[in-house]
Image 1 (tube, rainbow, N blue to C red):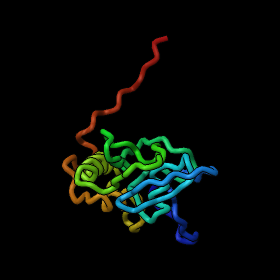
Image 2 (image 1 turned 135 degrees about the vertical axis):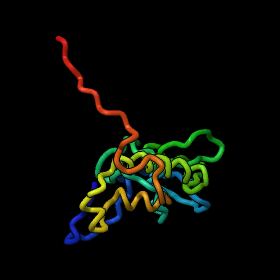
Image 3 (image 1 turned 90 degrees about the horizontal axis):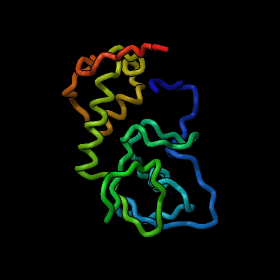
Image 4 (image 1 turned 90 degrees about the vertical axis):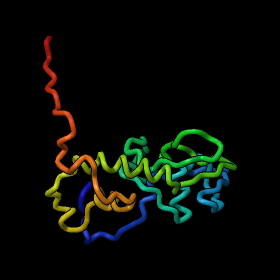
Length: 162
């Protein structure tokens, strides 16, 4: 994910593929009314409204799977913090993409990612690293886990016995 070729035109990545549907839903995201085709992810609905939700694993070229846990949102009246890339926009819901709780979770997740990010990342040195950009966007200033991965368990070799 590190590095991009500057010769190409940058396009907006909406995080999840577009959905085609005759039916639309209207929801509120960060106080803004948004109408999108039914089945559109909350992430894409937000981006179409000009609201960028932090993400690493989501891309508008592939089906989302919600693994990075940076795109979490809060839906008023619902518990938990669902991934916006895998949660469909629904009529009448009110979504918050920026709260103290979400910011704390996102910084914690990025701390873990950055603890295993190589110190000698060429893209970081060139100022073009998506990981470093995302760490900055979620407000990660220092990492309590360090940056050598020293606080992680050594991988175990799986030995086949049969």
